[in-house]
Each structure stands twice: as C-alpha cells, then as structure tokens.
Amino acid sequence: MPHTDRPVAVRARGLVKTYGSTRALNGVDLDIPTGQVLGLLGPNGAGKTTTVRILTTLLKPDSGEASVAGHDVLADPNGVRSAIGVSGQYAAVDENLTGFENLYMVGRLYGLPKREAKARARELLSRFRLDDAADRSAKGYSGGMRRRLDLAGALVAEPSVVVLDEPTTGLDPRGRLDMWEVIEQLVATGATVLLTTQYLEEADRLADSIVVIDKGVVIARGTADELKDHIGGERLELVAADDGDLATVERVLKEVGTSEPVVTESTRTVTVYVDTGAKSLMDALRKLDAENVTVQDVGLHRPTLDDVFLSLTGHATEEETS
Ligand SMILES: Nc1ncnc2c1ncn2[C@@H]1O[C@H](COP(=O)(O)OP(=O)(O)O)[C@@H](O)[C@H]1O
Ligand SMILES: [Mg+2]
Image (cartoon, rainbow, N blue to C red; front, side):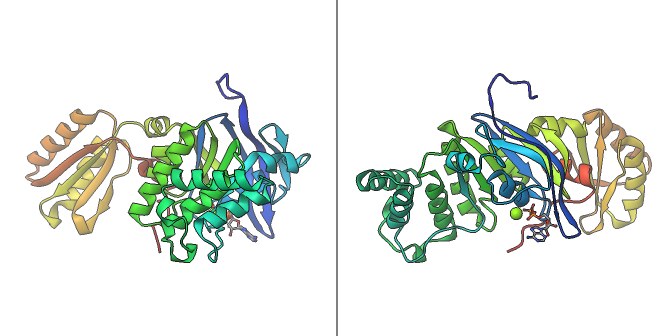
C-alpha cells in the first residue's frame, strides 16, 4: 500500500494482456491516490494505451485486477464508466458541429436537461479558452483546440477520475503549453488524473508520481525527484577542442566517472555520470591538463528524466516524430 492516508482512486494489480504472441502488459501494478496525477511514462508500444483500455473497461485483462473509484473493472464496469472521463490521443470531436454543439450534445447524452447542458457547455468552453471559437465549426479548429475540446467533452459529466492518453502527442510547442495549463487547472479542481505520455518533461511538470513502463513491465516508480536521485550524482559533460583528443577525454572520464562514458563525435562531447560533482570535474580537468588536452566547454548537470530513462532502459524514449 502507498504511504498515504488518502484513499486510492485507481488501483491495478498484476495486469497481464497478450495480443497473439505480443505480451503487451506483463504484470503492471499501479496506485493513484485521490486527487493526484500519475504519469504513466513510456515509449511507443510500452503498453500505456493497453493499461488505459483495461482501466476504462474497454478491454479485459488476461489476468490481474483493477478498480477505479472503488468499482472493480470486471465486476462493475458501469460503475467505473460513470466515474471516469477519458480523453485520447485521437480527439473524439464531431467536426461538423461547433464547439458549443459538441459539448451540448455530450451533456444531453449524459442526460443533462437542456438548460443545464447549455450552461455546462458554456462554462467548459470558457474554462478551456474556446469562448471565441464556440460557435465555429470544429472543422476549422487547430490541433490544440481540438484536444482542448475533446478534454472538455470528457469533463461534461464531472468525473472524479480523468484519464488522458497522450494528450499532447503531435501538438506543436504552443499547443502543448496550452494543454499543460488546462491540465494544471483540471488538477487544481481536485480530480484524480492518469496521464500517459512519452514526454519526460510532461511527466516532470504535471505528475505527482511517475510509473515508468517499457515493454509491458514497470521498470521504475517514484516522484520525478526520486527517479533523478535514483541514478545518483550528476552528469559531467566535456567538449574537446580537438577531434584528436576524444579518446583521451574518454579514458580520463572513465577514471573519474561512475558509468561508461558516452562519446558524441559530431559535437566532440564526452558524457559520464559522476558522484562527487565539482570535485570530479576538477579531477578531470587536472588530468586532461597534464595530458595537454584543451577543453572547449564543460558542464555539470543534475540528471534529467531523459537520463533516467536512458539509464534504466539503455535506450532513449522515442524521438518526436510527426
Ligand atoms: N489490438 C492489438 N493487436 C495486436 N497488438 C496490439 C494491439 N494493441 C496493442 N498491441 C501491441 O501491444 C503493445 C503495447 O501497445 P500499446 O498499449 O498501444 O502501447 P503504447 O500505448 O504505450 O504505445 C505493442 O507492442 C502493440 O503493438
Ligand atoms: Mg498509446
């Protein structure tokens, strides 16, 4: 059990799901305390959407169990559905309707009386900064506006648990920032949020705790800070002035560091993890000076979540592709 006195809003134990010969999930456990944001972080194909589909009752696990807002996903799928709002990577927006009509329709589908459905639509449009576009067809909306409208649709029925499956994948930087602000506002209302993402900065910024998943297995969990502390120390980066010195820099950093140095020839950069920060840096510079190596640039950085992912999996998260 997590060390918290808040009740757990989402709980999964030992989720396994196989598609043919692909084991999409191989025993995933997670807990989200009420009112918190859990970032489920992993590259393409890690099993994020499969987890979301099980938790939202769209898919049955081969084994394992899960509950959302106290409702078991297998025994009480209707109870789960009534407690959650889901917004996905592929916006479920009707392009032929205006923003207002989209939200009004969702409200009516949930059984709100006309007047309430209208009021709720207007309120959400304003909260998601879509007032100006409210009466325009969604066909003309930007990608970011569609995502915001889709998320607004997920909130019409005031769910206590909100599931966001890669809410910013494919958005441009502006759209991503807008979406982050909207998600932060949502969190401020006390909603429990499961957010899947491939973007480490997104998890870093929005999530109270992070579960790192790769190939259907949880490979780490904790707060962003805990994950960064876990790999320990700092990342030391040296740029050699001369291509010919790269091998020497690599050898010296191997002596000073706690990991295998990584050499990037195109930028003449060698990177290594060190556990004594500035002292390691001084050591390295002294040794290189003794070997007449000129260093063009140095840097000492706290690990980023990218470093965490790399050190855990031996590969980076997917590059952003369009
Ligand atoms: N309907 C499906 N049929 C067969 N394989 C699937 C299906 N859905 C997902 N997979 C496979 O399961 C794995 C996890 O997929 P998914 O949960 O979609 O990952 P993510 O959302 O993290 O990108 C991947 O290897 C994917 O190819
Ligand atoms: Mg997915």
